[in-house]
Structure formats: C-alpha cells, structure tokens
Image 1 (tube, rainbow, N blue to C red):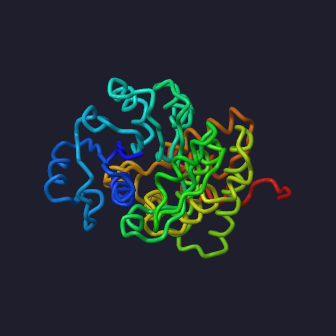
Image 2 (image 1 turned 135 degrees about the vertical axis):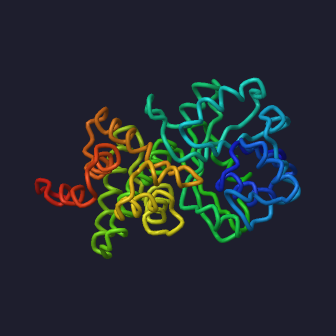
Image 3 (image 1 turned 180 degrees about the horizontal axis):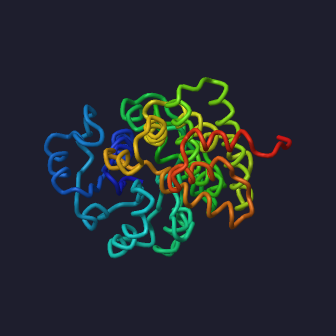
Amino acid sequence: MKNLAIIGGGSWGTALAIVLAPRFARVTLWVYESDLAARMGSARINDIYLPDHLIPTNVGIRSDLASALDGAEIVLGVMPSHLARGLYQRMLPGLNESMVFVSATKGLENHSLLRITEVIREVVGTSRVAVISGPSFAREVARFEPTAVVAAAIEPGLAETVQAAFSGPTFRVYTSSDPIGVEIGGSIKNVVAIGAGVLHGMGLGHNAMAALITRGLAEMTRLAVAMGGKPQTLAGLAGLGDLVLTCTGDLSRNRTVGVELARGRKLDEIVSSMKMVAEGVKTTDAAVDLAKRHAVEMPIAEQMYEMLHAGSSPQEAIRRLMERSLKGE
C-alpha cells in the first residue's frame, strides 16, 4: 500500500506521520485548524502540538477532508474519541470500499459506550477495521526512539496487513485478533493514570504506585474479559505496557491531570489549560457505565469518577479504596 491518510493533526497524529512517512509513497495529514495546517505546510513543523520535530517532505498537510482522503488506501484515525463519529460521518463522501481503516484513538464513545472500531463499523459499514495501541508517547515516536505497539483486527489477515505496512526500524508492530482487549486496555489505562498522577501529586511513594498499577490492571482485565476480550491481551503491550507508561511517564497528559488535582486545582481549570485532550477524563464516565452494564467491579474507576465529577477529594478517594471490604486477590 502506497498512500496513507492520517485524520487528526495533534501530537500523536503528527508523530505517526513522521514515523510512517518512510513506509509510504505519500502520506496526507488532515489538520482541523486551517491556520495551523498552513503553517505546517510551509514550516514543516507542528508548532502547537509537536514542536521541534521536522515533518518529512512526502507528508502533505490538508485542512480539507476530501483532499486528505483522495487516493488513500489506508485511513488512520487519530482524533479524540468524542469527535470520532462526527468526523467519520463527514468523511463518508470521500471513502470507498477498498479502503482499510485503522483507529489510533485511545478512548470510548461516552453515550453509546462503543469502542471506536465499532463506531467506524457502524458509520462506514465496513469490516476492514483495525486498531493500533500500545506504550507510545508521541514525542519519543517522533524522535525515532524504539517503540512497540500492537495491531488488532477481527477480519483474518487485516492485522498482518497493518503490521507489514506500518513496521519500520524504530516502530515495531505486533498482531492480535482481539480488538476488544486492545481497545479496552488503551482506554481504561487513561483512567488509572489519573489516579497515578494523584498519588504522585500527593507525594506518595512506590508502594502506592505499584499497588495502583497492579489493581488497575486487574480492573482493565475484568472489564475486557466481560466484554469478550482475552485476558492475555491485557498482559501485553496494549494493557500492561501502556498502563505502566501512562502511570509513570512525565509526558502522560492523564497523569498530569491527576497531579494537578492533587495540588488543589479544579478539573475545569486543568482541562482548559491543556492544549491536548486527556482522554481519561471522558473515559472515566464510560468506564463506570460499562462496569455497571457488565456487572464488573471497578473500584479505582469509580473513585476517579467521584473525584472528577462528584467533588470527592483525592484523600477521600484513596481512603475509600483502602477501607473497602477485605477480599482475596
């Protein structure tokens, strides 16, 4: 496959354009902000979301969806989850049945509780849909630092097609037949990462962080399995790998939200001051709703919801988690 369209010009979309450019004859990056697209086209730098990283010459920058999709064989969606349905609906006139769709969005659709690959299937009416996820900070990917992710699809051979198209010297792609596990891992880890930020912001140590990551992984796994995913997927790159990265890395936006909450800042103030979306804030709602739908116990997600949306303090959230009724692991 020679032509790739990337829909979403934030830090992750721009980093993917940079790392995948050598793999394709032509990459087109759609950017929502027309003024930013113009600057990126001339200066070859995304000065808002990923400064200091040069965009290769075979990456065309567009702010028009139709021209961005023209001639594309793979459409890689890198938009925030709450914008996914609307963007795919807008893309419909420029799509054709031969296209392969890959989602790199780490979130869920709140009102429907659908995974983003399910949204694509519903809107586009295709089964040629895959997801890529894993521990991958955009800046490090753009610096061509070694990164490993997983591509998952239900349709036989599709994950392998994405693997062959996307893999390169610094970007290693594994395959999976479990998009449910991959997408739940990539979504719920952001909720746990907010809690990790809270622990860090409160000055707590390694014991608390190790406990949070381990019990967070248990919650992610329970939910994924209840939805039809495989437990081993959550022990891999899209589960444990991404969870560890997002909970411990200073580049994590979701962790940053938790740190600032622990320091006493209000959620609205934190979110409005961030250039990029912290998916965990919205995903917390969906996580709690999915837990209820599937009768899965997710106490960390519940306490993050109480802290984000019901006014509980970080100290109260930790106290409730620690004083829950005792049980086996």
